[in-house]
Amino acid sequence: MTRVQPTEDRRRELRADCSRCVGLCCVAPAFSASADFAITKPAGHPCPNLTREFRCRIHEDLRSRGFPGCTVFDCFGAGQKVAQVTYGGRDWRSHPTTAAQMFDVFAVMRQLHELLWYLTEARERSIGVTAPDRAGRGSYADRLGRAFEEIEQMTRRGPDALLDFDVTALRESVTPLLRAVSERVRAGSRGANVDRSGDDLVGANLQRADLSGVSLRGALLIGADLRRADLRIADLIGADLRGANLAGANLAGALFLTQSQIDAAGGDDSTRLPETLHRPTHWRTT
Image 1 (cartoon, helix red, strand yellow):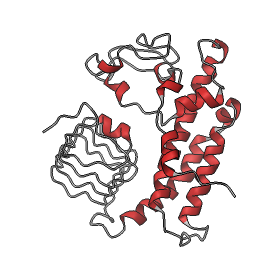
Image 2: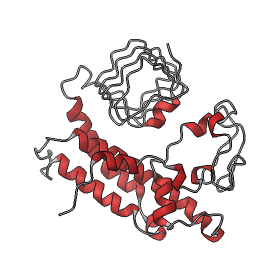
Image 3: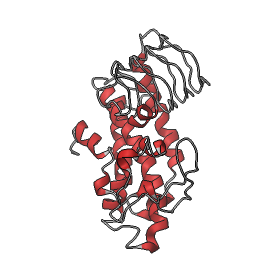
Image 4: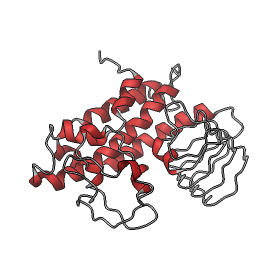
C-alpha cells in the first residue's frame, strides 16, 4: 500500500526553495521592460541581477528597483525539483550543453507542480466525501489521490519524458475534477449558482460586493476595487488579481487561491486570507 504523504509535507515540497535551486526563474523566462520589469531580458539569458551563487543581488529591493514582476512569480517548488531531482544537482552554468533543455523542463515542471498544488487543496476539501462521482468512477477523494500520484510520478521522470509529456491534455483531464470539487464545496452558499468565470471585471467597482461562493475562475479582476468584498469560498482559480484592492476583503476559505495571486494584489492587515497563504510584506497596515 502506498503511504499517503501528510498534507503539510506535500505543501512544503510545492513551495519554492531558492536555496536548492539554480536561479532558473531568473534565466529561463523572458520579460519585457514594463511596469513589472525595469529591463527587457530574452528567454534563456540570466538576469543581470543574478549572482554567481544563483542569488538575486537586489532581492530585498525588487519592488523599489522596478521588478515587482519577480516578487509575484511562484514556481510551486519546480525549481528545486528540476535542479535536485531531474538533473541531480547539476546546474546550467557548469553544464552549458544541458542549459536549454533544463529551461524547457523547468517550464513543464512548473505546470505540473501547479496542478499538484491545486490537487492537494482539492484532496483536503474532499475529506469525508466518499460518495462516487456522477459517472460512478469512484469517490472524488480516490480520483484526486490517483491523479496526484500519477502527476507526482511524472515529475520524477527524466528530461526527455517530461518534454514529451502532453501537459495541456493533462490539465484538461484534471480541470473537470477540480471544478466538481469546487461545486461541492460551494453548494449551499449564496453565490453557488453564480458563474462569472472568465468575466472581464478589469477596474470594476466591487466594494462590499457579496461574492461568497461565486465562481470567478479565470476572471479578469485587474485593478478591481474589492475593498471589504465577501469572497468566502469563492472559486478564484486562475483569476487575475494584479493591482486589485483587497483591503478589508474576506477571502477565508477561497478556493484554489495561490500566493502569487495575493502577492500581485494590494491589501491591508484587515484582509482575511486562507490559512495556507501569508500576508505580503508590501501590503499596507491600517
